[in-house]
Length: 251
Ligand SMILES: NC(=O)c1ccc[n+]([C@@H]2O[C@H](COP(=O)([O-])OP(=O)(O)OC[C@H]3O[C@@H](n4cnc5c(N)ncnc54)[C@H](OP(=O)(O)O)[C@@H]3O)[C@@H](O)[C@H]2O)c1
Image (cartoon, rainbow, N blue to C red; front, side):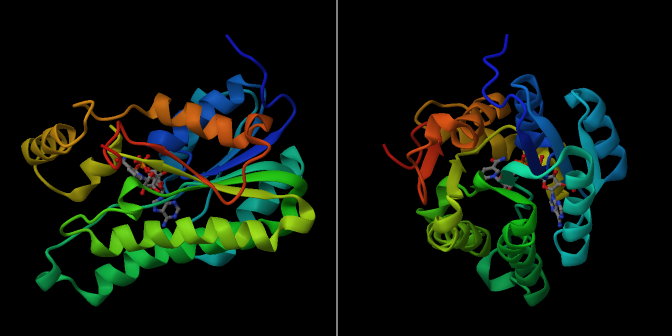
């Protein structure tokens, strides 16, 4: 079933080959959007494009390489036209006890999650239609403390701030920038930590126990939030935030 909320719109999703980005790309295509996704992994980009359908296009782009973002946007715009929606979603979750933190890890997290998000918006400016909607993926931890994850949480607070300033920067073009802040969501992000599966499962159980709803969120629950922010349903909202966290940051 579709309500065609994005009929004939062009939607670009960074980190659209995995997790909540992929679920969002599928929902957007089902809602009529011409979708372009980016990510780092050629094989999963290819599979994702097939599963998204509706003539979706996928381009490899690492947000650590700013030129590759530009090249990817150009390629998507050449095929689909200028963008009505940009979901800045690529990100990593990594942590270490504070005493063990390294400069390399700090730089990696900040460069992908904060600098990457900043330039994923800036590089898109020539390709965005006036009136476009930009959504950046933050996290419930943008307002709460989390042991071992100080730099991750700080990047998510930084992008929360970007949505306000970017919305001010882009007022004349009526481009809205908003934030979606998930709680813990069942995605491959935790499998990438390099831990044994039983530790990953234990971590997820621990996280779920801290959520008032006592479960992780699903990628489809996130996709519906992205759809609200991407579509005209949120036309009076800018510089704002939707928190989809099972009550974790609120109760
Ligand atoms: N899952 C959660 O509990 C949770 C909670 C709050 C916020 N978030 C945020 O939600 C967003 C999506 O994460 P997810 O949970 O769906 O995890 P995921 O399945 O691991 O997806 C992460 C996506 O980001 C892409 N990515 C990572 N580093 C990149 C880089 N340097 N350049 C380009 N793309 C890059 C990945 O591409 P490749 O697969 O090609 O590497 C992948 O598509 C992230 O910003 C994350 O911080 C997640």
